[in-house]
Amino acid sequence: MLKLVSFVVPAYNERAYIGVVVKALDKVSLPNGAKREIIVVDDGSTDGTADYLETMDNVESLRIHRLKKNSGKGSALRAGFSVAKGDIIVVCDADSEYSPDDIPSVVEPILNGRADIVYGSRFLGSISGMKFANRLANRILTTTANVLFRANITDEATAYKAFNRKVLSSISLACTGFEFCPEVTAKTLRQGYKIQEVPIKYIARSIKEGKKIKWQDGFVAIWTLIKYRFID
Image (tube, rainbow, N blue to C red):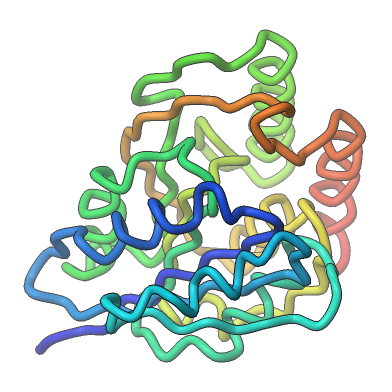
């Protein structure tokens, strides 16, 4: 039975990269002949991101969902999840730090019924250009998640996350910003789901190139993991 894979892509002022990302997602070879939809949630961009996407009439699988004002990555993802129709939902960033070539290995375990959640792990694969401070922050977040939830993952903050639709339907997300990753990790682990990981490639971009996450977000992420260890 063919399944539909929904790629949910939050985007804020990503006109320079979004076209490359969408075209790459449109060409990804999905396992078992699965179909796709690409949902780009424009998070109140001011650089014409959504307007540029409107010109991409050769991508039939593309759907554009506009938010009136910039509300944060978590808000954009929740909006995307609410309109996604897929049996499998894949979170993808709008930049080019992650390789679409890795997507088949991320969704394959769910398509074949061997997993309900798959994270693409940069630390099991290859990393280029990541600063020491970012590596350290990632290690701290992952260790915190493993200790709090008795998990065994290597990359809590990865942007490549895939879910069986029933997983996201079983939890209620409240995130508005970058705390999406720790919230969804905490709440799914509390529900008893296991996270399977596959290796992926990662090429970091700089703040000058458009990277938006800041060091303060690391503290928010740790607090989010701790908070949702004890409350729903």
